[in-house]
Image (cartoon, rainbow, N blue to C red; front, side, top):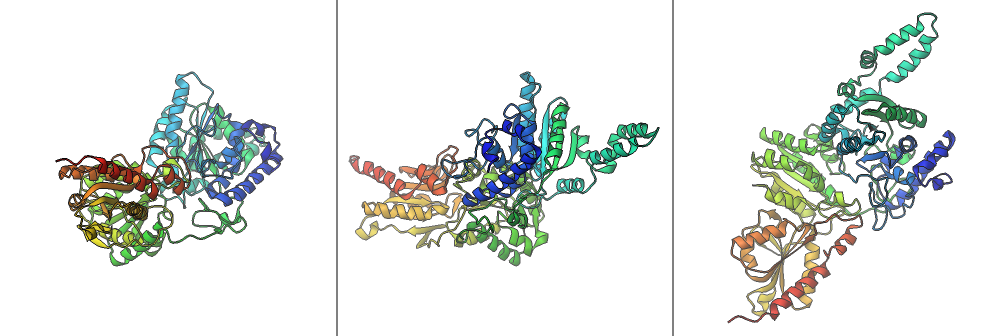
Length: 636
């Protein structure tokens, strides 16, 4: 790593020769494979942008020139070139974030790790520069072809194109993929550009050939060059961008640093909005990634650097349980269709797509459209299952509310990675869904506690034809089954009240366990029992609406405790508190959940410990609450 260790900032690149730059690119690839294989992270995207990132930092002067990344999972090379070369704790507590992070460096401008937003940021930053008199400060926005399938990107492009004197350089990192191969009309357009001889290359050839022609050669070339627009449409159908008023440069080989620097230099000098279309190869230089058709090692766990194989295998995860059940449902019901937003494999729908290719729809990174398209499918008699990460459903809230719920349509939303997810940081924790969905009239929300309940509740969800349903579950391995010992209303009793054995009518505590919190709640109940505090543990299964039997059950206890892997504000605890008030059940209620703050990246267990969402924390606080109740004087 002789060259890489000498790079402490972008201007250190200026002293390197072309041969040294090529060597540096190979050093960076070797570093990424070696280091990311130890920690896990986004490997494939970063292997694909090595030359592109080096060239950007040689031409543009960060942080004076703002360089932005969408979504940021391809920023590892940027981190290395801006002085952050300790990857030993990547995505771990106290280590580097897996995305741009403003606390790490002045070179990280934004922390957007939800896709398709970078062009909006670029538009605002460029307009601010103009107002403040900073005329020679281009804003560089790196966006993948997958992110260009998001509607927000095109809303921003519409505005950027209107600013003829705004120096915005849009770098399209075109690797034909988001997670998996990019889907849609835009992807087809970019594919055409990739496979068509570029205008600049044609003109370069024409200039050399025609200028060697005596007498008429120069005038012919000038005429040909003046017919640029028509020629461009003939040579390569890139007019879509130029019709918007955006200068287009490309396609450029995204691994040719000379070509990249030339293109970026032209773009920088243009003085207005420019698109530089770069063709890159995801996973480049790492055989195991290049040969992985699923996602080119988009994100990996800990792997063996030589083979690319996982160092250890984990048990069955929540996602695969859902994927298997979807295939079973698809065989039983021809009206079941599935929708994914550019995440076929991550959300577990690949088996369904293989079994029923005509009943799967990948809409690209367009969650809003996914929800409305699902509404259309449901209106015509099908039952769509829309599978997204919990944190990404936030983007489609208005569509869930006004297009699905208002029309009382049977659409099932399956939310993967709900609750604390950990290593991907603040933007990926699924801690808002059970709060924002509480306000949707008619919507029913299930939180399965184990694999058996994922299967059962998914089946219950798709039986609902007159309202939206939601099934949400955690990230990672699913634990052993948590059996029910009884039923009250629609709720599963996981631990019965033992106070009756001693002749008491009321137990001390009713613990309402939400979803994957069941093992924690049962452990807390055991700890309470050791202190002489009796309890009942129930899993409501469907947390919205609140089960009608819950207030009556609560009245048989002295204290109600709710435990959820969701933000405390407006969550299940709040809904249960309201239900108790409405039923005139006046009891102390303690709600445990995620505080309303953005959580730093760390392992899930570490975050849960930090926020006090562990069995000992719950038992300790409940013990103190019961002690205060015991200390109160008995009223006559």
